[in-house]
Length: 404
Image (cartoon, rainbow, N blue to C red):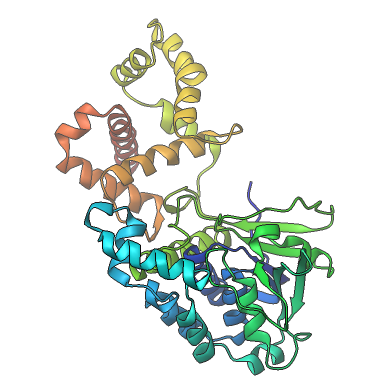
């Protein structure tokens, strides 16, 4: 069972590196703000360091504005349309002349020109606010000159150089790399992309790790028994690390927001967000009180022997549902609640039920049932949808009987 955030505690936040995936972290921050989660410290690398600086500044609206208006040309000196074609794989429509031109510039300059990012940071990052913030802020980078990992605290950074250290932390290997105080630095994610140790070494006991699964090395860290680690992470691929696209950014902010709320409100679901109130016995009941004909169809589909009603039900529970749980990639310790909601989510996704909403179970079932009524042919061809429809029908019949 996942751990939920205790609003009476102060937390250290770990922000992973991952380029354009970083919009997700701003969505998580929105939820933490709404629920009044106390942030004591932040450790971040790469885009996690940049977002950490924005959090220390306390200006959520500015952070959202940056990400919702992001583009390739606001980070790198490139053509937005051509870069979009390259990143999205539309190579046939990509001009060969442009590719040659940009490749030549890349080689001559020693990497992608990130002057736009420097300008964005100049206009956005307020060093004074960050240094005076009550939040302890640590960023990680890698010194190419000394060949070692470096941790820099915002309060320890030399006056006037905080933005430079942020840039050093976010020096993606493809970016043009300038020296800082006579030394060269590289993206901190190459040696420590999830810097939990930076907070552990400073005595933090309650830590929220915001994962975005960017490229880099995840350092092995031994977690002491008295340390509480809570992870907030996406359950789908966010985007390419260089996909600085405002549509993807807006979607990822939404994902981060609702994934954080999943933890804050202890919501069920993987792709959807469902407020649950039933016990495990009730979910077992819903998965077994279905038509005998439906059970036979399931046993046939999973190549199980057909026998008496009692035997068929036992085979369903012992053989079919475990295989179904495997198909949905549920945890090896899955329970009937997990399988029940996996089926509802499968149907909701298949039927294009809107995702970004906290559903009461009855609301989600109503949405699914309404869509199923419009998709009779598809329902008849899809075993999982037929099973969901059978579960819904029996649930509705039971409710009506209780009312009578």
